[in-house]
Length: 343
Ligand SMILES: [Zn+2]
Image (tube, rainbow, N blue to C red; front, side, top):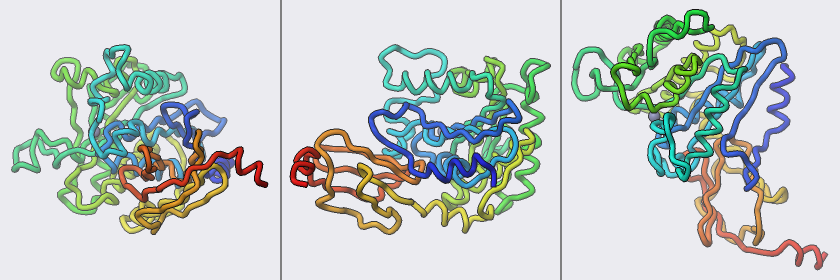
């Protein structure tokens, strides 16, 4: 087993507390290469195919050559709310941003990651409406739909840039995805937004920020009209695997890329550890738990699931896996000093 895969298994609890960085980044690296695929998910909170796929990629794949970096849940507040963006659309904030914008820190961090010299190619994962077709075939299948596309901003980058022939790469990904469709109407296509000349809104986007800095970047859009979350995740993972093949990133995964296996993984919520002493299994947990011992000051919440998150209100702690509210904890507050004295 690869030593880096070991690392991810041993550090299997992900800490959630006030000290965390704004952007969660999982690195799966080998020392033999500078080639790195950066996968960014959860820029829009109501697109679970994106962030569940990225989370599975980070935890269930073994990267044997070259490097994979994964940001599984960029816009955490909006993911918990299951909204596109509770403070506006992050996807439209990559050109300019006011100093007091609530997304400022996230955007600065993710820009720095994209520009990191190690990063060779950027994938931005989304779920979108309908099924893209070049000809109008009704409200779901038409040229304005974005679902089931590999999106590029332009055909090519600078001539000598590795992976700079965006159109050729996207066309290869499309062709191979279409050999593995669950149903015929799920067919993928390449959508070139020709951002520089034809799409002002996309000039504010993450991928356009990347390509204007000569970093190859693509968006993968699974359809929101697919019948299940596991189908959306299936296509996202299939697309990511195609990109890894193109980049010669050798990998294995510890499950079959089938809807049923994916569904099982999505439903495995894992565990939460509170202040390193209480441990709760989150799969099949009750909707509400009362008298949970919580400290009055800062609490540490650790999840085995990368998409684990906590939302605190005055008297309750809401426990989320992605956009799924898993349970609500009603705390019984105590001060740690008093307990120590009693002992
Ligand atoms: Zn989106």
